Figure 1 (tube, helix red, strand yellow):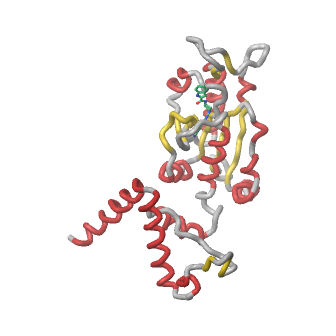
Figure 2: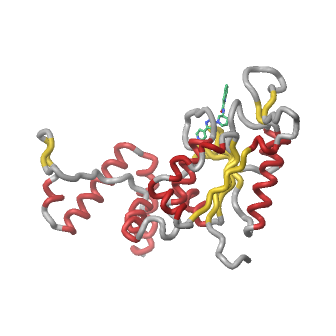
Length: 250
Ligand code: 9WO
C-alpha cells in the first residue's frame, strides 16, 4: 500500500475527454476534487486505436445505420483502466452507461460510493460491440428510459451521486437528511422568504417554531407526495416500515 490512502477514483473512458471534469469541476464535486476527497482519471479511447486513422468505430455487421465502437479498441482501453485500478488496490466495478442497463438507484449508488471507485465506459454512435461487454463482464446501468447521444451525461450524473456520499464532502447536517431520504420517501416541500409571495402563503406550521409539529408535518407531506406520485416507492416504504414493527409487536 502507498503512504497516502487511496482515494475514491472515477476512471472515465470516452472519445470526448475534454468534456471532463466539466460540471464535476464546479460546486460541491469540484470543491471535493480540489480538496483531494476524490480523483478523476479520464482516458481517451482514441489513444487505444492502432490503425493509421485512429479509428474507434466501424460499420455494423448485418447492415443498418450508424457505427459501432470496435471491441479491440474498447478492450485495450478497459484493460488499461483495470490495470490502473488494480495498481491502486483494485475492485472497482466496470460500468457501461446505456439505456439497456439495470436502472440506477440510491442503493447501487451507495454501494459504488462505498467501494474504491468506478470505471465508466461512455459509448457513442450506436453503442459498443457486444463481445467486449461479454468478455469483460461489464455491468450495464441506465438512468432511465430515454436515449442520449452518448454515455457522458449519464457518467456525470452517476459520479455526482457518488461524490456527495463520500465522507467529508457534505457535512453532518446533510448526512442526517440523507438518512431520512433513505427511509424511502420523496422530499417534503420547501419554503423560504418571503413568507407571502404572489398571494401564496407559507404553511402556517413552518412559522410556528414548534419543532415537533414541523417534523410531523414534513413527514406527513413526504408520505403524501410519495403515495400520490410513486406508488412503487410507497409500497416498498410500507413494507419496510412494517417489518421492524412486526418484530417489536411480537
Ligand atoms: C442509438 C441508436 C440509433 C438508432 C437505433 C438505435 C439506437 N440506439 C442507440 C443507442 O442506444 N446509443 C447509445 C448512445 C449507445 C450507448 C451510449 N449512448 C447512450 C447512453 N444513450 N443513452 C444513454 C443512457 C445512459 C444511461 N441512462 C440513460 C441513457
